[in-house]
Amino acid sequence: MNAKPEQDRVIIFDTTLRDGEQSPGATLNPEEKLIIARQLGVLGVDVIEAGFAVSSRGDFEAVQKIAREVGVLNGPIICSLARAVRKDIEAAAEALKPAARGRIHTFISTSDIHLTYQLKKTRSEVLAIAEEMVACAKSFMEDVEFSPMDATRSEPEFLYQVLERAIAAGATTINIPDTVGYLTPKEIEKLLQGIKQNVPNINRAILSIHTQNDLGLATANALTAIENGVRQVECTINGIGERAGNTALEEIVMALDVRKFYFNTYFRRSSDSQVPLTNIKTTEIYKTSRLVSNCTGMLVQPNKAIVGANAFAHESGIHQDGVIKHRQTYEIMEAASVGLTENSIVLGKHSGRNAFRTRLRELGFELNEADLNKAFIRFKEVADKKKEVSDWDIEVIVRDETQIAVE
Ligand code: KIV
Image (tube, rainbow, N blue to C red; front, side):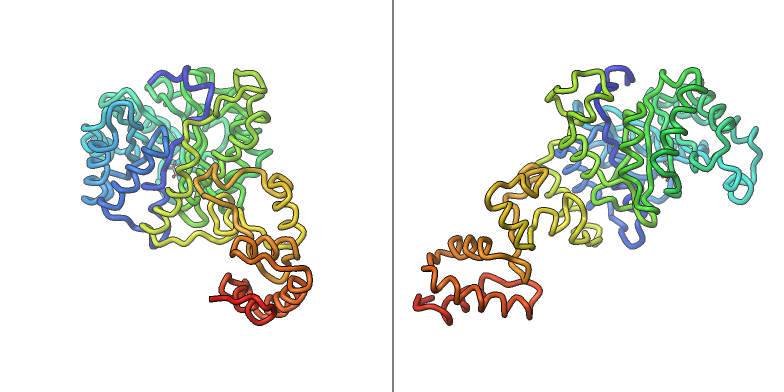
């Protein structure tokens, strides 16, 4: 894969089936993985990290099935994770054989805390292993991604050396993982500037970011990385993943879509270009989110950006009044753009007359002013006692407070 043509947009690397599946309790069987992978293909992701082939028989089978059925010509690149260990790389290469375009993603830790306590290796040993194992992966396929795990807590000079060696050995994508979700956006910027200035051949590879969400900064950090030349973002549907999860695909994609004119200035294009910054078909986002939630059993919090049940819902009277008059008063994107058919006005104690009257009309009731006043007073009494006033409640209110017959 040639790095250069991709530089004018962001490559979406979806790791729902690998890092996402590492969420406690979210285990998927090969059949479920295949169903999700097919939908990721429809969604238009560029790379699907289908699993960690060496980790289990089931994961090997899943990567192989996805490579065969989803990794077709003009389909997404199918990727398998592999430690910088020969047997991992061989398993990944074997599982990926049926894919039209495969990628091996190999990684080794570079922070002193990981070297001392986990790997029990010196820096020079890690340097040699990284180089040797990237070359090993390269002997199987052209497309090789390298990640220095815990990069953001690694000593910068050592990190630069490892990255330069990995590129020399053939890595086509260099991914920078904020493995424990530790940095702030300003620090991400500083780290990436340091890498660009101190890794002489960094431009030969696509620069990628993998941000975890331990401090709730994953999306902000990934967007900052894009502003600083990163052209691949690793993310998951609904932001699932280890601990507090990963960057949510839907947040990155919609931020780049809604704020296109802002982000265009960081790409080689005019600031008013309408060309999307990703290949994602945004109208497939909601459906994909539901599918992942159903298969993993991981519920989406109601206030989750983009895909939460409340993301397009308006409860307060002032907001409802505004949205009824003009959507954009309180909506920066249309629900339809992520595949929802409508925004929803939720009637509750903060709702105003305008929203109440609009819902009555939707339910087929055209009340005169006097009846509307009586019904609205009763509605407020009910709303004070309940979290949400349903259409059934409203029909009862209309029946009790007006002369209108309700069947
Ligand atoms: O969080 C991490 O460091 C990873 C790497 C393997 C990319 O998942």
